[in-house]
Image (cartoon, rainbow, N blue to C red; front, side, top):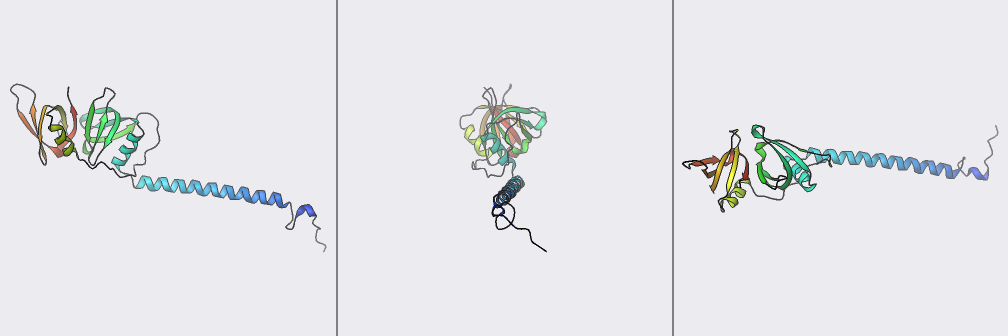
Length: 193
Protein backbone atom coordinates (compact mmCIF):
# COMPACT_ATOMS: atom_id res chain seq x y z
CA UNK A 1 0.00 0.00 0.00
CA UNK A 2 1.39 3.33 -1.01
CA UNK A 3 1.22 6.27 1.38
CA UNK A 4 0.06 9.54 -0.14
CA UNK A 5 2.92 11.75 -0.90
CA UNK A 6 3.02 15.05 1.01
CA UNK A 7 3.92 18.15 -0.89
CA UNK A 8 6.09 20.86 0.58
CA UNK A 9 2.92 22.99 1.03
CA UNK A 10 1.41 20.32 3.32
CA UNK A 11 4.19 20.65 5.84
CA UNK A 12 5.52 17.88 8.09
CA UNK A 13 2.19 16.99 9.69
CA UNK A 14 0.00 16.98 6.61
CA UNK A 15 -2.42 19.72 5.65
CA UNK A 16 -1.36 23.29 5.69
CA UNK A 17 0.63 23.95 8.87
CA UNK A 18 -0.52 27.57 8.91
CA UNK A 19 -4.19 26.52 8.72
CA UNK A 20 -3.71 24.03 11.55
CA UNK A 21 -1.94 26.62 13.69
CA UNK A 22 -4.75 29.12 13.01
CA UNK A 23 -7.35 26.54 14.11
CA UNK A 24 -5.33 25.67 17.21
CA UNK A 25 -4.94 29.36 18.17
CA UNK A 26 -8.67 29.98 17.59
CA UNK A 27 -9.51 26.99 19.80
CA UNK A 28 -7.17 28.28 22.50
CA UNK A 29 -8.72 31.75 22.36
CA UNK A 30 -12.19 30.23 22.62
CA UNK A 31 -11.11 28.13 25.60
CA UNK A 32 -9.50 31.18 27.25
CA UNK A 33 -12.65 33.25 26.71
CA UNK A 34 -14.82 30.50 28.19
CA UNK A 35 -12.48 30.19 31.18
CA UNK A 36 -12.56 33.97 31.69
CA UNK A 37 -16.38 33.98 31.63
CA UNK A 38 -16.50 31.09 34.09
CA UNK A 39 -14.05 32.88 36.40
CA UNK A 40 -16.09 36.11 36.20
CA UNK A 41 -19.28 34.19 37.10
CA UNK A 42 -17.50 32.50 39.99
CA UNK A 43 -16.18 35.82 41.33
CA UNK A 44 -19.65 37.41 41.09
CA UNK A 45 -21.18 34.44 42.90
CA UNK A 46 -18.55 34.68 45.64
CA UNK A 47 -19.18 38.42 46.02
CA UNK A 48 -22.95 37.94 46.21
CA UNK A 49 -22.63 35.15 48.78
CA UNK A 50 -20.55 37.39 51.03
CA UNK A 51 -22.73 40.47 50.58
CA UNK A 52 -24.27 42.45 53.42
CA UNK A 53 -27.11 44.94 53.50
CA UNK A 54 -24.71 47.70 54.50
CA UNK A 55 -22.40 46.71 51.64
CA UNK A 56 -25.26 46.98 49.12
CA UNK A 57 -26.13 50.44 50.47
CA UNK A 58 -22.46 51.42 50.20
CA UNK A 59 -22.32 50.31 46.56
CA UNK A 60 -25.53 52.22 45.73
CA UNK A 61 -24.21 55.32 47.48
CA UNK A 62 -20.91 55.21 45.60
CA UNK A 63 -22.81 54.89 42.32
CA UNK A 64 -24.87 57.92 43.36
CA UNK A 65 -27.94 55.92 42.41
CA UNK A 66 -31.33 57.40 43.16
CA UNK A 67 -32.97 54.85 45.44
CA UNK A 68 -36.39 54.11 46.85
CA UNK A 69 -36.37 52.89 50.44
CA UNK A 70 -39.43 51.17 51.90
CA UNK A 71 -39.51 51.61 55.64
CA UNK A 72 -41.74 50.87 58.59
CA UNK A 73 -45.42 51.84 58.68
CA UNK A 74 -45.54 52.08 54.90
CA UNK A 75 -43.16 55.05 54.74
CA UNK A 76 -41.17 55.49 51.53
CA UNK A 77 -38.21 57.72 50.88
CA UNK A 78 -36.56 58.66 47.59
CA UNK A 79 -33.06 60.04 47.50
CA UNK A 80 -29.38 59.21 47.43
CA UNK A 81 -27.48 57.27 50.08
CA UNK A 82 -24.85 59.71 51.38
CA UNK A 83 -23.44 57.77 54.34
CA UNK A 84 -23.40 54.15 55.46
CA UNK A 85 -22.54 53.24 59.04
CA UNK A 86 -22.63 50.24 61.33
CA UNK A 87 -26.41 50.17 61.97
CA UNK A 88 -27.86 53.00 59.88
CA UNK A 89 -27.55 54.93 56.66
CA UNK A 90 -28.15 58.57 55.77
CA UNK A 91 -30.37 59.38 52.82
CA UNK A 92 -30.50 62.81 51.17
CA UNK A 93 -33.80 63.58 49.47
CA UNK A 94 -34.18 65.69 46.34
CA UNK A 95 -35.26 68.61 48.56
CA UNK A 96 -31.96 68.36 50.48
CA UNK A 97 -33.39 66.86 53.68
CA UNK A 98 -31.23 64.25 55.39
CA UNK A 99 -32.85 61.23 57.01
CA UNK A 100 -31.07 58.75 59.26
CA UNK A 101 -32.57 55.30 58.69
CA UNK A 102 -31.81 52.39 61.01
CA UNK A 103 -31.35 49.08 59.22
CA UNK A 104 -34.05 47.61 61.48
CA UNK A 105 -36.50 50.15 60.04
CA UNK A 106 -35.74 49.41 56.37
CA UNK A 107 -37.74 46.71 54.62
CA UNK A 108 -36.14 47.09 51.18
CA UNK A 109 -34.08 49.36 48.98
CA UNK A 110 -33.94 49.54 45.21
CA UNK A 111 -32.29 51.67 42.57
CA UNK A 112 -34.86 53.80 40.78
CA UNK A 113 -33.17 53.42 37.42
CA UNK A 114 -30.94 50.82 35.90
CA UNK A 115 -27.45 50.88 37.36
CA UNK A 116 -24.61 48.48 37.98
CA UNK A 117 -25.75 45.63 40.20
CA UNK A 118 -24.38 46.20 43.70
CA UNK A 119 -22.50 43.21 45.08
CA UNK A 120 -22.37 44.44 48.67
CA UNK A 121 -19.31 42.39 49.49
CA UNK A 122 -17.32 45.16 51.17
CA UNK A 123 -17.06 46.12 54.79
CA UNK A 124 -18.35 49.47 55.98
CA UNK A 125 -15.57 51.73 57.20
CA UNK A 126 -17.74 54.29 59.03
CA UNK A 127 -17.95 52.74 62.51
CA UNK A 128 -20.44 55.27 63.94
CA UNK A 129 -23.71 53.93 65.30
CA UNK A 130 -27.15 55.55 65.26
CA UNK A 131 -26.96 56.46 68.93
CA UNK A 132 -23.59 58.17 68.38
CA UNK A 133 -24.93 60.14 65.42
CA UNK A 134 -28.00 61.22 67.40
CA UNK A 135 -25.83 62.20 70.38
CA UNK A 136 -23.81 64.45 68.09
CA UNK A 137 -27.01 66.05 66.80
CA UNK A 138 -28.37 66.47 70.34
CA UNK A 139 -25.58 68.93 71.17
CA UNK A 140 -27.40 71.54 69.02
CA UNK A 141 -30.87 70.58 70.33
CA UNK A 142 -32.46 70.46 66.89
CA UNK A 143 -36.11 69.82 66.13
CA UNK A 144 -36.49 66.28 64.83
CA UNK A 145 -39.13 63.92 63.60
CA UNK A 146 -38.64 60.40 64.94
CA UNK A 147 -40.39 57.33 63.60
CA UNK A 148 -40.25 54.20 65.70
CA UNK A 149 -40.76 50.58 64.81
CA UNK A 150 -43.82 50.51 67.07
CA UNK A 151 -45.84 53.54 65.85
CA UNK A 152 -47.20 54.69 62.54
CA UNK A 153 -47.21 58.29 63.79
CA UNK A 154 -44.02 60.21 64.34
CA UNK A 155 -42.78 62.01 67.40
CA UNK A 156 -41.87 65.64 66.68
CA UNK A 157 -39.98 67.91 69.01
CA UNK A 158 -36.62 69.04 70.30
CA UNK A 159 -33.89 66.43 70.65
CA UNK A 160 -32.59 66.98 74.17
CA UNK A 161 -30.16 64.18 74.98
CA UNK A 162 -29.02 60.69 74.12
CA UNK A 163 -28.01 58.14 76.73
CA UNK A 164 -26.66 54.63 76.37
CA UNK A 165 -29.93 53.19 75.09
CA UNK A 166 -32.48 55.98 75.45
CA UNK A 167 -33.17 59.26 73.70
CA UNK A 168 -34.96 62.19 75.39
CA UNK A 169 -37.16 64.58 73.43
CA UNK A 170 -39.25 67.59 74.38
CA UNK A 171 -42.39 66.99 72.32
CA UNK A 172 -44.23 69.73 70.48
CA UNK A 173 -47.61 70.65 71.88
CA UNK A 174 -49.18 72.44 74.82
CA UNK A 175 -48.07 71.80 77.40
CA UNK A 176 -44.72 70.48 76.13
CA UNK A 177 -43.97 67.06 77.54
CA UNK A 178 -40.94 64.81 77.45
CA UNK A 179 -40.75 61.49 75.66
CA UNK A 180 -38.15 58.81 76.28
CA UNK A 181 -37.51 56.62 73.27
CA UNK A 182 -35.60 53.34 73.25
CA UNK A 183 -32.83 53.80 70.69
CA UNK A 184 -33.31 50.22 69.52
CA UNK A 185 -36.90 51.14 68.56
CA UNK A 186 -35.94 54.06 66.29
CA UNK A 187 -36.67 53.45 62.63
CA UNK A 188 -35.72 56.88 61.31
CA UNK A 189 -34.84 60.40 62.38
CA UNK A 190 -34.92 63.57 60.34
CA UNK A 191 -34.30 67.21 61.10
CA UNK A 192 -37.39 69.41 61.01
CA UNK A 193 -37.10 73.03 59.96
